[in-house]
Image 1 (spheres, rainbow, N blue to C red):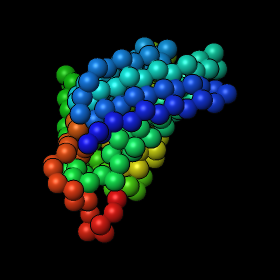
Image 2 (cartoon, rainbow, N blue to C red):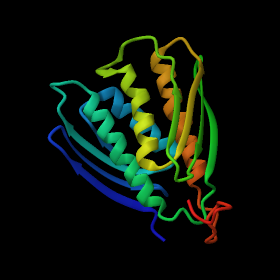
Image 3 (spheres, rainbow, N blue to C red):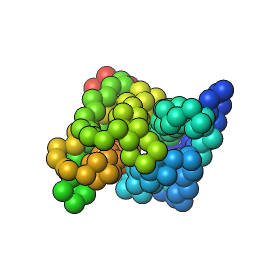
Image 4 (tube, rainbow, N blue to C red):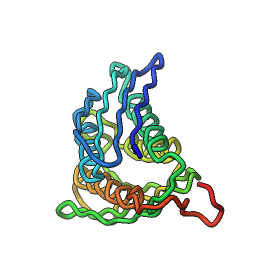
Length: 193
């Protein structure tokens, strides 16, 4: 059974295209925001996902629409690729260090969107991405992907390290939660996710 999805979204602010394969493949990312591309590449690589993602956004305004809409489309692709969520692990948790930084992510592919994000970034921007938009990325991903996501950076002095550790921890938690365990059971006492 294919665990992949293709999603496109065009608005007056952005044009986003995502092809996601939960079971691996090539990774190709282009949003016009170098730091954001770096974070998305880490998410795909450590999540074990195949990901082709492009976004043409209104970067002359700022980075907000590009980051938000990319998260919404990626979350929608994740939701579609999971289908009824039969035979998946459902829950995932992980810690990821990057030098002095340490992040924790916990995911539940419950079908009920919720996000609690604390990156503790000190600088207003990383590259051309406003720090506040990185937390907003995780929130938007959780809403569109219909998952509960908790991401906390527990320590770290360098904001680049803090952000990257958060993306890597999230990738590892999602990899675990999306894992196909076999069978056709929906992992819920309710019988539906």
